[in-house]
Image (cartoon, rainbow, N blue to C red; front, side, top):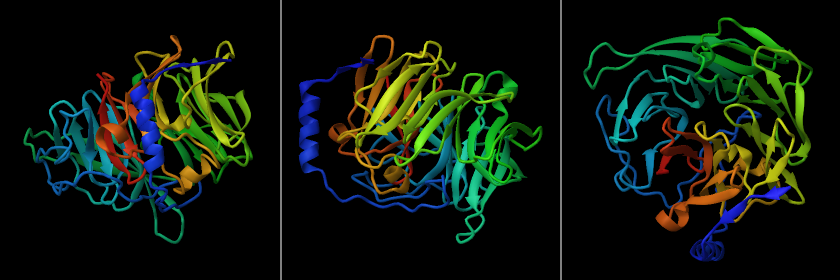
Length: 405
């Protein structure tokens, strides 16, 4: 297996050594709730002073008092977010505490609130690619552990006033929903598709965002699946644990049988590129985490260094052989991804760009050295033009962006 070559300067190596020596060993612990949903928030670590204008309806505000869009790295939201999407130069996200939805223009350094309907304790949010529908996931109450799934349709205001809000209509999705994936934007009908696992029926299903056209794609006795898009297919893999063998499969988005592509591998997590021709996967072996890319057509695999968890990465849509990752400064060892899911470990990440064609890895940024900030990359996404990488900082669930060009 071929190893990706690393373009790394002496200065970066020196900075890594200094960070390793001086790093505080205290690890903040985050709240966790229901199985498979590692929500929660942790402590701030070296994060600049927070703005207090988050709840201003319709008013354009700057990202942050200390870090702005003119900088390479900047914070978009200074409060925890439940989820976000990118389209054009815009980022649309959900405030976790209130359920209010905000929109940010990455180019003009402006932020507005587009909904004012308070729906507290939204722990996960999944947007339709156009940003005008979103699935909210929340606990019905703190003790029951029952997750409510509310789908919202967002209608833009007819008024051009900056304080005009979107109209919201909601639909409650039925069933005990576990993992969720969203259809791609093209063709148009695929973008309005939700894929999810129903624990009460042990089925992987699809529906529209409003729950109509419900269709069973696959059914088995096992229900702890994780779902990712993989071109016209779904990438389906078992819930990851360093203590259990994991498997990954392709499932046609129209339904059918599972086609095995990976496993058994301990702690397996995986993501596919936009056409499903490449699978990036990580697994636990010999007390450490390995990262590989597999060509799903030829079966050939190449190891990626430095390693990270596959879910800290995102594939480019413009260059199907390129992906970006947050990779921990000190690497990964021990019981991962379990401890990361539970909030027992947090990482301070580099941002890397990997090219599987040229077999090179390019360092985009080291936030610790460049900004004295520890960022633990979670749920990364690229802007439509791929000029920005947007991600959640898992340590405190705030939303950040880094300029790539």
